[in-house]
Length: 345
Image (cartoon, rainbow, N blue to C red; front, side, top):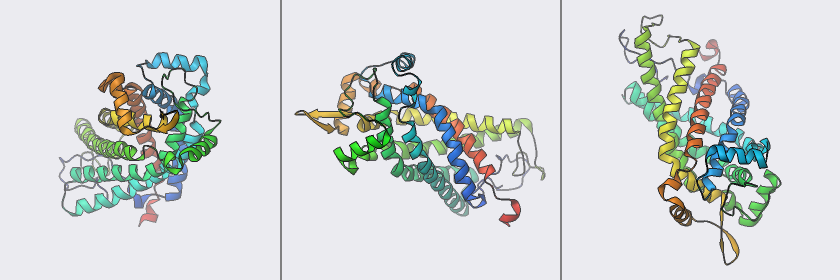
């Protein structure tokens, strides 16, 4: 059951363009095309992620422009893509888990809430929150080890970080994986897993809820202003086919709004998570992973609450650009992967 189905057929009701549910997708095409499309998105946005990560582990506030110039001067363009190969290898299975869990949860919860008598808007919000929560938790099983390895590669060789990062030097992602596993065991690859769940699960729930609500509200206002009707005479109804440019604009605006809310709420947790995964402490000359309490104490010493928001600019920009490209790519991917009408009947 589509969440955008009409609750009644009154001509004054406004609808967003019809949703594409899980059962309507060609799964093999969905995952195959998704791997290619999202790899391209990751490549385009990766330099911003590197800037954000380096700012978070730095003991002093350093501007994005100064850090960018430093990377270009000492490391060249390669510095902006440290750890990208490792990140990409993890992104493909993590995205597959994420998209699968997202669509299955959204479809099943959405259908259940509509049957329970919730309004279309409320059902969409509940289904989106549940889907965002579930998909983030599923993806972190794959993404946390990749995050640990890729972030260590990102900051390796940094002339901007004033905190000792690690006594180890890594040749590549595989070398880093082996050395972390040898030094800390499997738990070393899942360092910060708990706080990653605490960061990304609510962040995704907030993001998808905000996005779905903003998306419906914007389409409602847009439908009223343009007054276009579908073949049944309903303004912006399920059969309403909006202009492709308007569709992308609404999706992008909704995604940017949702990203702003999510970034502000979860930034301190993301900074703590990044430091836990990247930085090491020393006790009696022995390198040890830092605890959450030690990480928080260091941040308080370095600048209090403001230190928790280091890298907010790049993170906000990264989340907004990533979310905008992700959601437009995601919706485009779903339309590319939709089964032909005759196969659905």
